[in-house]
Image 1 (tube, rainbow, N blue to C red):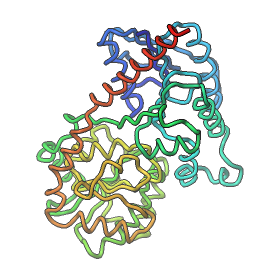
Image 2 (cartoon, rainbow, N blue to C red):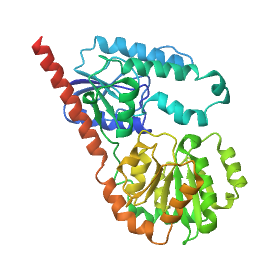
Image 3 (cartoon, rainbow, N blue to C red):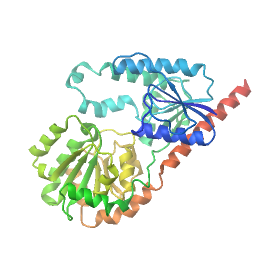
Image 4 (cartoon, helix red, strand yellow):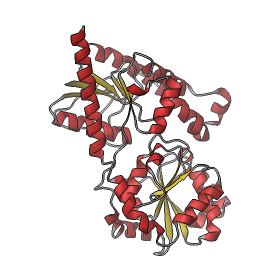
Amino acid sequence: MKLALVHLRHAGTGGTERYLNQLASHLAAEGHDVTIVCRRHEAAPHPAVRFAVLHGFALGGAWRLWRFARDVERQVRGAGYDVVMALGRTPGHDVVRLGGGCHATYLALAHRAAGNGWERWLGPAPKQRLTLALEGRTLAPGAYRRVIVNSEMVKRDVMTRHGVPERALRVIYNGVDLERFHPRRRADEGRRLRAEAGFAEDDRVVLFLGTGYARKGLDRALRGLAAAAPGRPELRLLVVGYDSGRASFEALATRLGVASRVRFLGGRRDVEACYAAADLYLLPTRYDPFASSSLEALASGLPVLTSAANGASELLSPAEGSVLARPDDPAELAGALLYWSEPGRARAAAPGARALAEKHPEARTVRESALLLEEVAAEKRAAGRAR
């Protein structure tokens, strides 16, 4: 097949970018002709993968989105691709992977918690409005053959918001690197990081990991910690990830009286060591179509406590963690923390957590995606013969 994979940004980091690189590499290794259509790029993930760079002049995020979407439509129209797959919101392609879920849902559940105050009065910024418009065009009837989503939660949302028929939707869960994230790291890297953070051997360390603290629910985590603290003096919270508003969350921890129990490490590249240093993983997110960190935690042998607004929560059973129905309720969150921080409980759950993650390796995600592209190519060939 001659394939185009379309995404504004090609890079070596980021969940969508990792998926893009792995899929492109797999397809090229299978002998397909693969082009990544992007605005900028880093090194090719496979020697046979090519780039089509569309770097038209644009100022600001909204203009960049609009210019790239327009340029992509022109580029793919005459390139003779068998299948074009969009990994973002660019209209008029055969396959769309909606890894970020429905943008209107993100705005309703998460953006307002972290967004600028003026947006509450004036409505979404131009970039947000353009994203909504592009998503509407991308998912309009006749604009696609298949839509890939990464959870049943998003599947239901896409059907409701955009009227996408169920037959056109395919749920392909995110995958996890089972070698990078592994319980064996606890003995060395995990113990070392615990010591660096000032945690004692008998502390119960809860990890919160994510960029964008408000969206990921760090305020909820801190209030839950404060509610659980009287019943579990050894409970600690390790916060990892970038956020320009970190100081306000540190101030919240102080106001809640738990600052001495919380360690802010900022962004780190060795996140596998962070999981290895923890006993539990907590992500009371406001909206995540599928938080890959949930699988990373499970692969590391950690029970996962997360909200129902995380698509990955649908994988969990009570043996591997807790799904918080009311993550804004500190009492519910505290109850989950107290339950899972009982001595020995998290350790006993570790084999089951790991076994669940092993059902979702990265290779499976890539393989299912590639098979879907082949399915669409065959469908297009059959339609061409019928004409």
